[in-house]
Image (cartoon, rainbow, N blue to C red; front, side, top):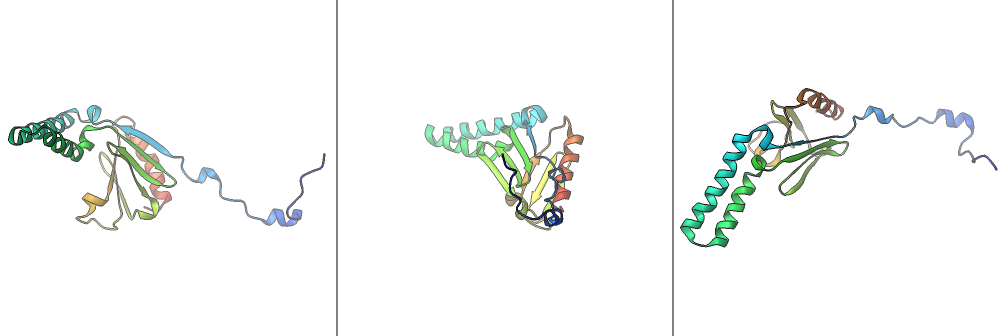
Length: 162
């Protein structure tokens, strides 16, 4: 059996820089947040508003299909308050999975990130703007293990200079 062929002479191989260690980048973070566990009163109020809007439309229009559709529209708007969310921060960016699937922001799209009392806000704008409500992404952090998770989130944000 023969030894594998060398690509470079030994002196050149020693001078070739090695890629940075994988330990330099923090490992991916993934967690879930349930509004029913974290804020049950707010979740119940959002569900009651959704049902109330559906009943109100049903009483006014007497059309079941329209009542269901408008009830789903209100429920979709309030879904972050009703549906559990799955959050992920990795080398590619940040992502949140809610009622309508994954919403993702690449690190190249994020200009500002802020740790808040209940989560992490990432925005494509360098300064706070009115459009933050529509373009930013909020990753809620559960109360259990919040300090440990916020430390890991800070490591990712610092790694991307945010």
